[in-house]
Image (cartoon, rainbow, N blue to C red):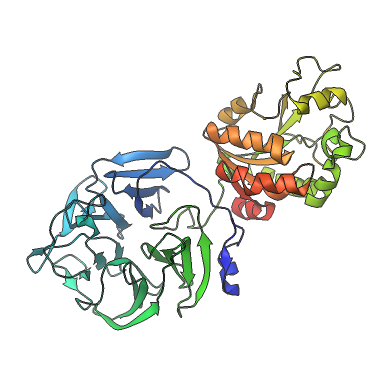
Length: 476
């Protein structure tokens, strides 16, 4: 899947070939993601399921609150209290770290709010939130009549107080996502029904002025998705959920590009220790699989298959070598997985053409040149070597024992052949709960068609498919 570049500035923000990884699934409708900047975990809501969950890289997804009052948008204040929009109670609340729950806002001019939806906190301590009526609809909230005759955007003064309406009553149909510019001089608010993003100047007293339309037509008849969650990056670009994924606008309202995602998107959040994508080397292992002379070198047992030519085309030896060197320097465990048989190939079942060919070719025999690793990819001190007699690196080996003993749950999956050993290893790793990363230029097979079919289709469902340079950047 490639993202859509509409202006050159987009590629300074994201690699147009950057992979999309899935960290959890099985939810009804996810919303309100927020990253804890100190403890490094993601909170998010499943509104129809009435449950709040968290994700972190070590434990994965766990449930933290049920019922959750069908919460939606969440954020933190300066003291890292959690500010939550609750659909079921039509309230904006504060949750203290010790578990205390405080109501920040529930009524305007004596009437119950519709259902606070999204929220952001100004550095002054003032809180701004949107109030559409989605929380009074079936599924996403609790069905009940509305008390207010409009859908507004409100401000709570620093230190608390009654909510103040900061936009005209009739301006929005369903105000939804909102965010500040980096300098907090502008507030952006989108409208899901109108499919627009509006910009306001933030005055010294916290009021809003100079309303204008930043972007309109954020809709499509061909792809699912509408303006909903929205965030601003450090350069002032606005990232908003939209048809097909996330659309990115410049501060001037120019559409820079579109982040393509395989499912409809309702919200987004920045995350990670530095709020950028990264790989934690302490949790990561790199597999170098089947990069042996018989497999990918001229003169090897499988030279006539086309494998040597495709390995050169992919520059697989050079790419794996430079990635392994950086990985070791960062503390990543490097594991060499070799297909090794004894003379005569005892114990190799002839149940598949691959194994029949291996036996007929007298390939991968211990102690021979063909079974040795290719020049430049020999094991270094501190590396592990795992031997196998099947396609997958997991089958009948000590790979999982090494990973558990060293505390590694993220795997950079490299080697030959892409559509066989590498893909089988990715599939099984995903089933076992490991986070699989496949840099496609660190893999090769018999030809480009087989390789592309694997990385563009099969492995997209079980691994993050990326390239060596992206992994190097993520390792820091």
